[in-house]
Length: 513
Image (cartoon, rainbow, N blue to C red):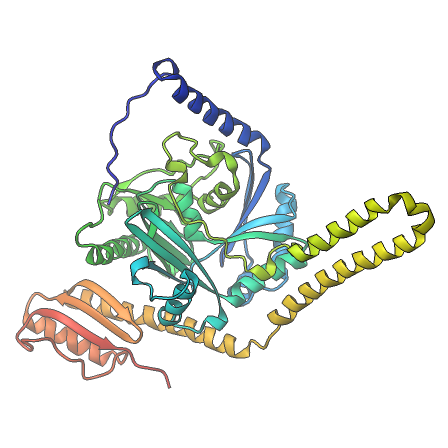
């Protein structure tokens, strides 16, 4: 998977031809100038346990701070974000000395749906947008009406083009944007944390493990494209340090194995760097146990932003990635294109919340009025009062039109959401149930010494490939899955049962009544 790069020797300006030397000098001047002209960028990384804030300017990290939610706030924000989030962020800004009315936000990938679709797999349609919209109805397990849906075309090269799609529950984005707005803070952009992390590492080929107190994320970057963006909930407070490290290592290995199963010709290259980020990446005991059990090529995060030595970079990786999206000086700062390696650049802020801009017709109306005033200016003293009234009426028309557009957007947003909330709750229940199913499969396998090599699911169907030490252990494993009560019984045994010691098992989860 790692991209093969030819070795390029360093050359001085005098060793280059005049044209190449001028181009290099211009690029250097652009980068230096960009650092001076780029304005302040303030980023918020919002999780279920707290908020991290960072201020950058000209490619330099100026200030940063983080604060955990109190237990009552965490419970409230984990369910539904109210205007108290805006108050919390304002309080954090005041304590950290960061002043901003506009922010860029990253949110957790939990409860979001993302798919990477090869462009040739799209159904035929008059336009690409219609093709993506058609396939989205098939691949999204919930109605698009309760999701904000976004997509972007990604091209690793001319022959390898994909469409990256993301569905985010409307309730999550609406609550955050409106809560900040109530506190006088405007949201400029929203990204998944996994997107920001991919940009922060600045590599075309990378493996990322982001560890948070309530969830963790795994990202596999291939040729600048996020082939895998996986977010899972977990409860490390219920585990020992050893168990938590072992669980994370197992999940990382399982994701890589799953990737290899779908990329037999180009499996994961173990030389690819692994970056570990997140709040728990600064836990020395966990890191010591985790690093001791990994066989990957682990590298420290070295973003192209200028960071103070005492900044915990891995803990603020998402903020750094968000800032890099806005910082002009971050383009090609190393001279090798690594800083701009990730091609994914998707703003998840719905059009409804974008700053209002006048339409072409409205601009034309204003220009026409100004031109008319200029033409009749010599007669202004004679017709001043009438011209004033005409100008005032025209400006009122523009203002009323703008208010009408805002009201229309507000009315559309206030449509009944009860059905959407119910369906979204079912997603959460189904996510939890599926995690419980996986836990039963893995736990029973560990008890009986059964090795689970692959695991995949589609809807209520789960397919696993496993191998036991002997046919009795395999038979007991199948019986244990049936007696767990989580799967429809009887479970169809594989060919050769009961004297086979392994094979493919097809499970169907029990549906709740």
